[in-house]
Image 1 (tube, rainbow, N blue to C red):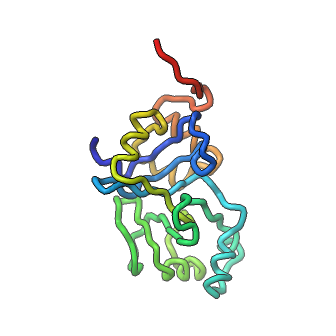
Image 2 (cartoon, rainbow, N blue to C red):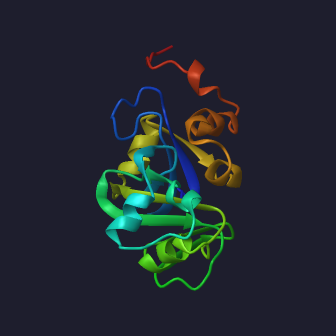
Length: 184
């Protein structure tokens, strides 16, 4: 299977794991050792202000305080990941493509608090990971649909619409898929 990095995984309706049910995952890495991705449609119950408090950062604007945090996955839920367009000079960034960089260092959070960070940004806590060949097997078992990356899904489509919208980019209405498997 070719690399699925920079693609989206769309959970099939049959996936009932509470961590991944109706999730859309941006795949940051996919190689022989395994895969790493960030769920991009699961807002947490608390805003970015919680992170600012933990890091003892005083944000300049109330709007920044209310930015949503997303559940990126069940692995290391205390670890933050910032998905953004602008490359910038952040200490710990992984450039994935023209519109996607993932940064894990606190300097970008401090810049966001001062309204000096990237404009288009998603902040997740935790990540999703698959061991060697695990994701390939899950795709073959129809656990996931694979969708090419679309900028609007990552940065514009409302969180609650991303699952259905991602399917539509493939010509599929997710809500009309059956959770039952059958044989012809």
